[in-house]
Image (cartoon, rainbow, N blue to C red; front, side, top):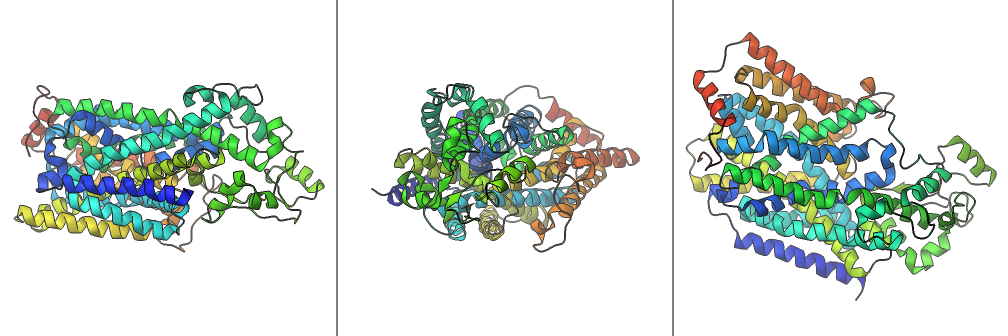
Length: 603
């Protein structure tokens, strides 16, 4: 059976499973559409939360960043620490209290806590901006996976993915999405770990990829990371296990991802689906276990992918004579079966090479390194001829590079799509819930019937899918970068409001609104200065590099500063105005100091 047919069968089977689950778990009420009827078991909710949270950025893009940046790029450790640490923050400081409050959406909590429709509407705006930005990264991942494995254009892949999400998300709501995400977690974790085990065995003889990362490279007899360091430095690249020079930016970026994670509405609402507060705490613990199964493997996947990629494009690199050895020839790429993966990915536009000097070889080296560049020019080379390696292809291409069986390649394709679609569905539900429950029912038509609200939620979901697909056609960067912008927006706007709403009785409605608006506007303006085309293609902007950043702070890291602006504005305005009403202060006290882990407050 050829690879395309195998991919089609495996991916088609998983899609049929998702739609079948949605039909079985169809939402029949607003409670089921928004919160799965509050009847999800903590273990299943933990698994669904893992799938909801481990997006295309985690499955597809994160290991690619680790592969290409190594420890020398601050992003490697930042993504790992920020996303996992943020989930701990969410589980300890927010989830149990929000569940005890017993509402359906994050804006609803903010509106009630700050006794203000204006605060609720500002929260809706913050939620939609963050969630739409986030979902673009997921749709980008869907396009990447489809482009390669179903051999269609990435735009066509987006349309197919959007259709699948529409089929199960609009039909099932949170109830359907929850049980679909359980299945998607099983698919994505198996798809991620099986290739990693095969590749670890092949390169190091270790069954566990985590052990293989720090094991011995079988072909050379030296430590795997030491071998990788040797190869990349000989080619003129930064040492793989080096250290970042921009410590401030790394700290701010990690913190932005951390508090952004804790402020993401689509993750928070997962804790509204369990029967009681104790179950919210338990499901948070289970989710961390399920998340760790992927996150502890990701560094090994990235390092081994970089080693495989390097030795593919420089065959002699395996002997330690990289710069003096022969490169891969254009003829080999066209004729050798083990190099078919190169042409497969060239067709997608995500991998490109060019024989610049016409010698029939593809030279791979860092032509930005002056010493290496001078030596290369002496040989008659005119620049690095591996011109494009998109970070998002690393995980998906790794099984092909390592020549693993066809069923493993198909499984990885299904896993990447599961990761992207699961998070996309959660984000779209958060957007639809905010529009139908907070805007339509909360502000426009409070007397709307349950049937009417359910219809409005489904229409809002459909509209959100259309908008997300349109924006996903022109993403501002690879998946993890786009997602990082969303985390920064959530960090600067939603997280501070939730923290102050739970832990401070002094913050009033005026302070909350001032804080959210200040944090959001500050962060958006900073991002716009360097990434204006993210919002409006063709917009003039400053070059997005460290020389132009204020105090060396990247647009991906500015969410931390935005959060500080939010906290400061909220406290200053609140202290200058009246205290919240006594009944609101008593409400806060009842949420923050629960009398037990019994049944949560009913909606």
